[in-house]
Image (tube, rainbow, N blue to C red; front, side, top):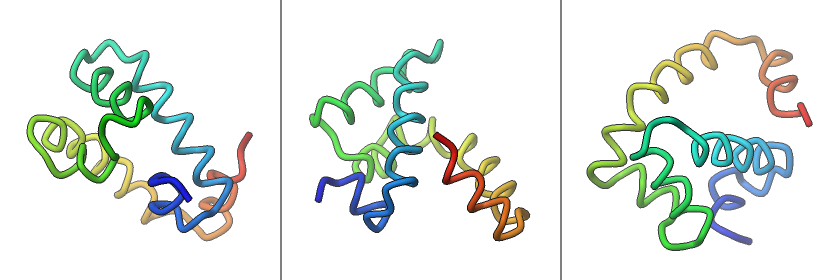
Length: 86
């Protein structure tokens, strides 16, 4: 199990979704998030390390909070749909 599987409890759909997000961040116009995503993808940094260290953690906090607020308002069906998208 890799560190992304650990974060997603081994849920294949969630792991794939997390990989897609990292791919998007790697292509981001935000150089700090792009650097962080590439480091995570290359195995130089775990996502947990990125989220809890400066400057990456601070840069990730605001968009994550927006996502989390939206996610918390979703129905279980909407959450399942979100994690099952290819």
